[in-house]
Length: 284
Ligand SMILES: [Zn+2]
Image (tube, rainbow, N blue to C red; front, side):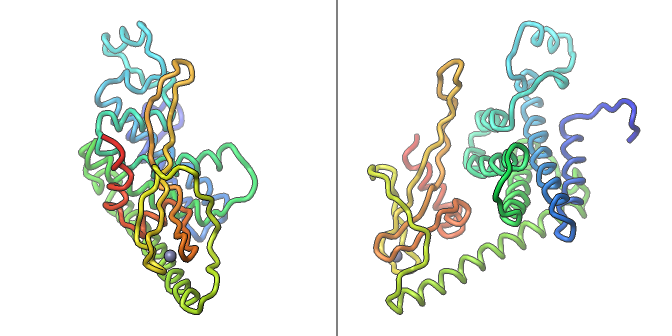
């Protein structure tokens, strides 16, 4: 690629950022390389999501649509260089085109949180956690978007080696997360059987039980509470609700004190299918 004038589609941008992001996120590299890699992967995902929107209608990526934009599309001119929507809104629009993508919302929300921290904040953070989250969640979401929305072959798009590397890492991290959780659970079971207090994060129950669901506690088999929180997106200018994103806030057993406060860990424990049922049981 030359350095004078480039003309890239969203998907070309996306693939380029994934490739570079993977190079940088290599665990042997330094922290700033890994952080840069994380940012590039999330930006790459954003480009993919916008490609889906633009495939349906070039106006769908625009923040505000004016007559000039409609005219431009009518005259077959591109909207690519116009100000486009944020990742959050782009994904919200994508789920309107593909309602089955709804379940990925809490995953994308997590990615946005990680990206926002790296891009806009400072202070304490665990790079390993962010890296795992970005690597696993970008891969999962990319796979679904390519298969369901873009109908593209992933090996062809990224090259067999790159895609295989993404999958391998994802699997390794997921396995490590599962092992970690399993190990912690067996440790806690032993502590519980010895009658000691469990060293779990304390959780404050809300006063309203409507958002509660129950799941067998892995430690003592009592009914543990899963509290579902709902993030509501409101368009402040218009005062309308754009969408609601349910996610598991915590799992807590009042009997033994076991708790999980990470939504990814709750998903690992109860499984994707069951969590989906729990999250959407109050909807429709
Ligand atoms: Zn329990």
